[in-house]
Length: 306
Figure 1: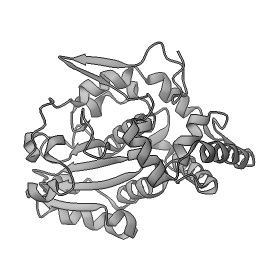
Figure 2: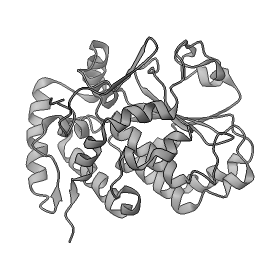
Figure 3: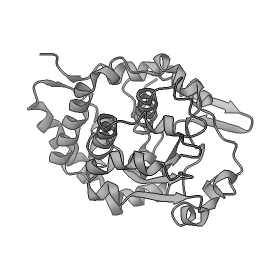
């Protein structure tokens, strides 16, 4: 079967039944309220979509050293949405997206779920089963006491995040509403802070600021000990104002977090009243494994080897 937003053909839509809850990627059409967001915030309209995809395709034809699925309209829209339908901006984003993969080819080579079991089995990276009150996906990274840094490297954490965000990019709902990230730093140790280096910090910031075709609307830092300042100091020099203003420190102050995220979409550990059970990294992994072919397709595109 052909799912419009996917680059590969799959036998059936990946989904996993967990009790009464069905875990799946939301690959269908955006909901009515989200379509309104697209009109209001992203200048989306059928006419503009048609014109912009046509123009973006034309612009990409001039990039002769870049092999990408430019005939796939849904794929073009994936880059046009975060750029508010300005074709030149979308072309530049596509070039940065692929240039970043070349620059960090050690991380991106053959990156797909089957090769990254370790990060998911260690359960320090997960996505909430629900969205926030604005329809955004919620990615949670627990880099404190859950993180056994001798078993899982920061490079693996990064790869896991890339795998999740590539999946999120397939969802029209997420393309429009974006995503928020929660870093839970509870129990961060001195040894763990030593894992962070300036090159790693720069890679993460370059990726989030310039190379991800997703609207990262907020990064919430919770439960951070004082020692976290040492880690954040590494990231600071690379942050531009737009992303810097979206990083919010809450410590253990749940009311502060609730100013941005409704308790209805947060579990009790963050002062919320969400009834849905936590989806562990390993459960998401079972779902991601069903999409391995999609990652092969993603990896087949890019700048041609000189």
